[in-house]
Length: 132
Image (cartoon, rainbow, N blue to C red; front, side):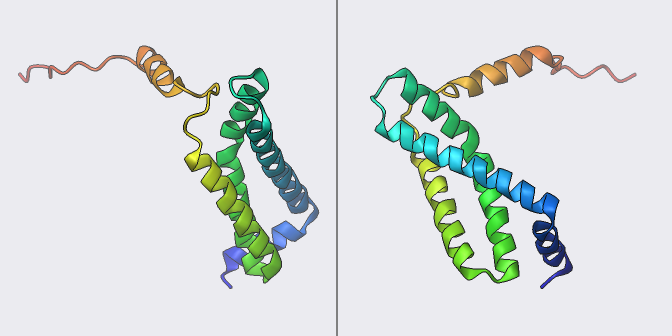
């Protein structure tokens, strides 16, 4: 085992590391529960809109947290935790990648954020200054 993974396992076993892992797993749980609420809610309802927004917001951090947790479990040899973590990781990733038709706050925000960013940055002139 490399020294980086050994130190990660050692940190995960400490009190601050355990607190961070617990908070990370709570975030994953909120993400999964919001997806379940979204699935069980009436289409085009406010409850479904909020649940879809929460899921879309927390899905990427949940994937990163579960990947780190699985890596720590692999390094420590906790194979049952690895199996459960990989299942959760693949489930959240699958739901995040295949959830494209949902109405949520993030829908259309990419273009709006790009437009806002362009308005905040100085425009670049295509014409180069004349060389003397």
